[in-house]
Image 1 (cartoon, rainbow, N blue to C red):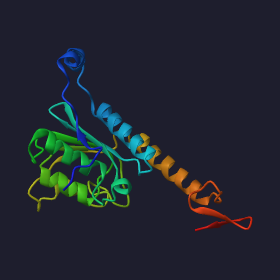
Image 2 (image 1 turned 90 degrees about the horizontal axis):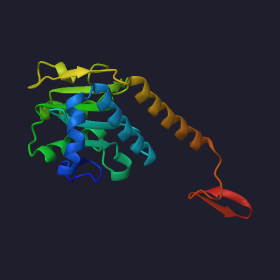
Image 3 (image 1 turned 90 degrees about the vertical axis):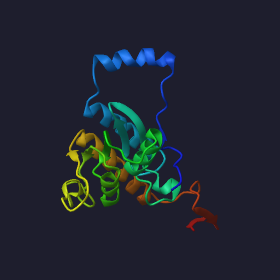
Length: 201
């Protein structure tokens, strides 16, 4: 599997920045909501790239080790889901494929593929925002996380900042539908002018 451009391990802080970061971490541990906000930021990046706005963050022992967002269209890769890419990047950052001790934060309930990877990677927990009524595999349509027939089970927390995650998705698809209904203009790349009438290619 090739590395995705955006799903990178989080760089270690330098000695200079560690002094600034560590007191903050000692004062207050980040909550599930804080990490989900980071995932929502990743989802916003996906929307800016024309991708479905889903973002993910992998946290191991209280430290963000990877973050990613959907890139299926950009990479022409059906596996380039946010959480899948983030788990691959986390494994590389940690130098191990087993993601024990890790929590995956993702803005939309994972699909079967991504939930299956969570089982295979042996994550400790998954925290997701909005449920996915058409493909959710952590409780909505299926529950891969607690299937006793599989070799690993993990904790799931759902509904964290679900309204914000759902709003991002609704806004994205609303804008996409509006753009599809708009009549083509000469400035569009798929429209040419022939004898005074715009023709769509």
